[in-house]
Length: 192
Ligand SMILES: C[S@@+](CC[C@H](N)C(=O)[O-])C[C@H]1O[C@@H](n2cnc3c(N)ncnc32)[C@H](O)[C@@H]1O
Image (cartoon, rainbow, N blue to C red; front, side, top):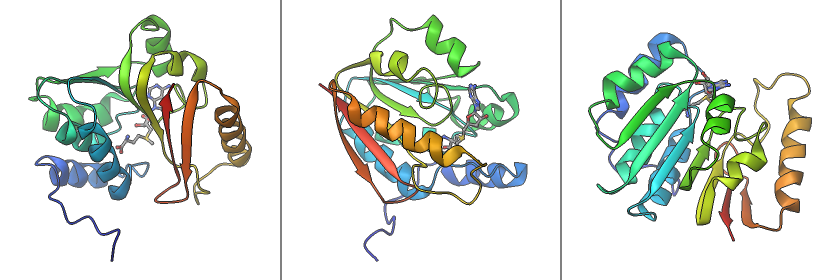
């Protein structure tokens, strides 16, 4: 099967996955998405990375695995319980800073920072403060979102929000993007 993830999981991944399941956290990033993030991360050496929506750190582990030693990652979540799993398993890695904060507040306070890679996996940075977040992306930087295909757990009205987000992205003239009906539905865009 061509989509099978044969490559080795990051060292901390299986332990994070176990803790995630024990917490009953269901919004975790898919393995195929994690693998894609690692591949894209490897294409950005000596870069600054941002993840909005750490969860328990599943995707974080894969992004870190793709990053080189000169790169840094800031990852933000507003749930200290979820974040504590990421801290326990990934906190030893000096390249990552795990921050418990509201993503929207953090984006507003750090609007002048620039990143080469943004994985936006929560409301702020995706459905909220999209302009502000894309302004943080440097030229040639990558912005990645998932969950763009209909999901069983979407609340009523969410499909309209997704359609609006995709239309907003399509209308932008400062980005080049590809929409993929793969995994949970991925959009990758590069800043012009
Ligand atoms: C889809 S999950 C992230 C999954 C994670 N990337 C992974 O690899 O499994 C979305 C996350 O956003 C967090 N979240 C929700 N609202 C937030 C906000 N306003 N600011 C920061 N984090 C938020 C939730 O706690 C949750 O962990």
